[in-house]
Amino acid sequence: MIELNPVSKGIWEAPVEAKSGMLVPARILSSEALIAGIDQAVVDQITNVACLPGIQRYALCMPDAHRGYGFPIGGVAAFDANDGVISPGGIGFDINCGMRIIRTNLTVAEVRPRLEPLIEELFNTVPSGVGSRGFIPLNKEEFRKVMTDGARWCMARGYADDDDLDKTESGGCVEGADPDAVSDQAKKRGVDQMGTLGSGNHYLEIEFLDDGGLHDPDTGNAFGVDRAGQVVIAIHCGSRGLGHQIATDYLRLFVANASKYSLKLRDRELAAAPIHSADGQAYYSAMACAANSAYANRQVITSQVRKAFERIFGLSWEKLGLNTIYDVAHNIARFEKYSIDGKAKRVLVHRKGATRSFGPQNPEVPAAYRGVGQPVIVGGSMESGSALFAGTAVSESDYFGSTLHGSGRVMSRTQALSKIRGDRLKSDLAERGIIVKTGHLKGLAEEAGFAYKNIDDVAAAVDSLGISSLVARFHPLACIKG
Amino acid sequence: MRQFRISDRFTTADIGLDIIGDSLLELFAAAMEGMFAIILGPCVEKDSKASFSIALSAETLEQLLVDWLSELLYRFDAELQVPTACRLEIDRVGERYMLAGSVQFRDFEREKEPSEHEIKAITYYKLQIIETNGILSCHVVFDL
Image (cartoon, rainbow over all chains, first blue to last red):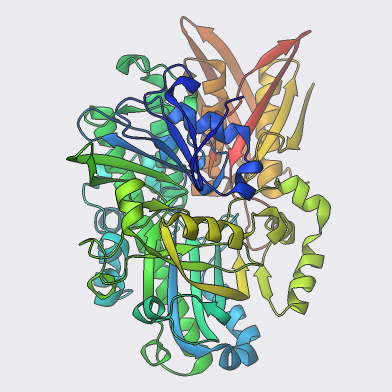
C-alpha cells in the first residue's frame, strides 16, 4: 500500500520514492472526506503513470477520480512534446467523451406542463441505446470530412452556426486529423452512428437552475445563465464506435510494439509510444479523427434537440434561446504550452475523465468568456443534475489547465442493482418531479444517483482548490438514458 | 464444459466476466456467450442466418482472446450480427497463437429485441488465462 502525504490543503502526494521507476511525484487533489475513501487501485494507477517517459512535474488525479484502465479516470499527465510519450490508456476508449450544455430562455414553469411530450419527442429525435443508428447517411468521403473537420462539417451541412463553433472547444476541430490513420473497421463501426447518444452513462438531460443555484451571478450572466428557474439542456456522449475501435486498434499496436520502444509495461493498458514515433504520430492523427467526430456528434444532437423544442413550443430555436453555452471534451490529449521550471514548454496533456479549465485571458477561451474563464461542464448522476464552473488561472499555472469531469462512481453496477430495481427508481424519480425515458430499466438502476459520489462534495473540493470556480448548479427535470 | 458468470468484482464503472472451460475452444466459446449475455441479457434466440470465417493471430493467448472478442464486438456494432455458435481451432505456430474457424450468426433486430449494455471495448485489466487441474479460467473486464 502506497502512503499519501498531505502537501497542503486538498493535495496529497506519493513521492517519487513511493514506487520504483517513478519519474515525478503523483498528486491527488481531493478533500479530507473524499481522500478517506480513495480506492488503492487509483493510487497504484496514478503512480504507474508517474513512471512514463517524458512526464512533467506530477501525475495528477482530480477529486472525482476512480479506477480506470492504465490511467485512473480523473487522471491528468503532461508529456514533453519532444521526448515524451502518447498513451491510448491516458485518453480512454471513448475518445472525446465530453459534455455540452445549451441554455434556453424558457423557465421550469413553462417547460413542466409540456415535459412529457417534450421528452417523448427528444427520445424519438435523438437515437439512443444499444445498436442505435443515426439518421444522416454518410458515404466514405463525407465521413472523412467529419473526421477532419469536426463541428465545422456540421456548419457546412446546416447543423451548426458560427456561434456554435465559437462556443465549442477549439472551434470543434482538432488539427492533425488523418483518416488514413483510421482502420476500415473503425470507420465501419462509426459511419452509421452520427447523431446518436449511445448507452451506459451517456445521457441527454433537461435541467433547471434551482433557487440558490446561481453561485456566481456575474460569470453566470456571461455564460447566459442568469435567473432562477431557467432551463438548460446537458448532453453527455462521445465518438461512439469510431473512437472505441481506434482506441482498441492502437492499444493493441502499442502493446505489441512496447519492446521496440524499450518501454517496461507495468500495465498493458498503459502501453505508449514516443510522440514522434510513426506509431505515436499515427495514433495522434487517428485520435484527432475521433475527437472531431465527437464534436460533430454532439453538434448534430444539438440540432435535433432544437428541432424537438421547436415542434413542442411552436417557436424557432433562436426565439427559444437554445444557444450553446459550451462544448468540452473530457477524454482527450492536446498539445499545450506551460511554464515548467521557468521555461515555456510544449507538452501533450492527457486528460482522461478530466476537463480543460482555462482561466480568464487565455486566447483559447471564446472572446465572450475571456473575461471570466472557460465554461467547465461537470455531469453528475441523473438524480443530481450538472454543475457549471469557470476555468481559473490557478488551474493553468499549477495543474496543466485541468479540473474534474463528473462526480465519479463509488458503487459497482451489481451493487446498485442489489439496492433498487429500475422500475422502482423510475417511479421514485417521477414522484420527485424527474421524468426518465429509457429503453433499458436495468441500466437505469445501474446508474442510480447513490452509485455516484455526491457531486456537491466534489464541487466543493474543486472550488476550494481553486482549479475551477463554481458558477451554477442545475437540478434535473427529465433525462434520456440510452 | 464451459461456463460464464457476469461479475464486476474488479470494476466500479464497467462490467466483467468470469469464464471457465475444459479446453481453449470451450473457454473462447464461453467468452463469446458471456459477452453477448452482457450486451443482450438472457437470450433464447439461437437460429442462425449465416456464418463468417475468422482467422486471427497473436503473441499471447490473452491477446488472442481480446482479438477474438474485439472481432465479435466489431461485427455486432458495425453489422448488427449476433454470434450463435462457433467452430474454432486454436494452435500454437512458432511464437504465435493462431485462431481459425467459422462463426454462425443471426441479425440483431434492435426494434424488436431487448438489450442491456453497450460495450465499448475489451480491456486487458486483470486479464490472465490460468489452468488449474485441467480447467482454464479467466476474468475479462469490458469498458461500458
